[in-house]
Image 1: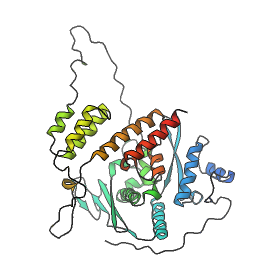
Image 2 (image 1 turned 60 degrees about the vertical axis):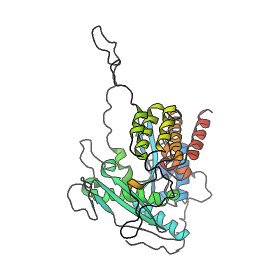
Image 3 (image 1 turned 45 degrees about the vertical axis):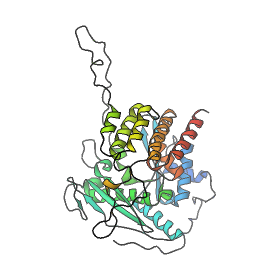
Image 4 (image 1 turned 45 degrees about the horizontal axis):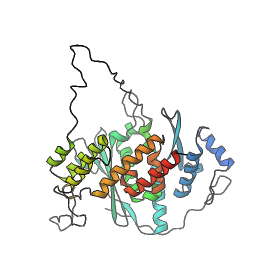
Length: 366
């Protein structure tokens, strides 16, 4: 394991010329807008998208006019127009990580990249002709490990016939490793990298969407014909499943399923949350992980702290937030939240999630 120690070089000099982005700038200058239009941004782009892009360029220090960062439009059937998402390359992520480390002190580096085959075996070099199933990258910042796993099927760019496209077919191991590195860097530098994604991560967004399944039509039951609705399978007995579950982690899985069907705050979901606190593994977070034979502490899935009431509250708060965003037709919720708060929705507390819900609801009522 090699950790790169960061020195303290001076910050890169500001770009000169009329296109330079100034720290105090709040709107794009006319000549900057003209350049962005030439770069492919259409008239349909919203003021909010352009404003967010400017803020992101200022926060990351990446220069769109040197093609370090892009605003990429992809057509959305729901919105009837191109939705624009900021993108950079993995080199842009590395530039930000090195710059932030140089400015704040400390260190950052990597452990060896690992690739996984379809049987679940991990390797430190990929020699097979077929693509790996996943890649794992670990970033070390100031002595703390930030690991991420990227599954190949979730990121690979394909043609309509399913064949891999471009570099995904030529260098699949390298492409999925870049995705894993981007995920790990975003964990290690959440404030600095929130709201911007790498081109490798977003390549799959251009894949052809599968044809939607036809909507089933309701029909009246005919005489002497069984009523399909009357003979439908009964709803799951979530309480019985929770009581029979072996561990608190199993209860959490059941809780999420019940929450999706029944909604937050119901008697059933509240009782399931109480059941989870009584299951094996429901121990205090401060308890130590087991010690291995070599004397080091090791935490595996069987010793992880189960979700407590705060985590269950965050699950319910996320449900409320996504419902509010759906009503407000906010298609960029995840990116907006991460840009505003510096953490992904899945890692946020219930308080932050409810705060965003309040802001969306308030804006939608105007």
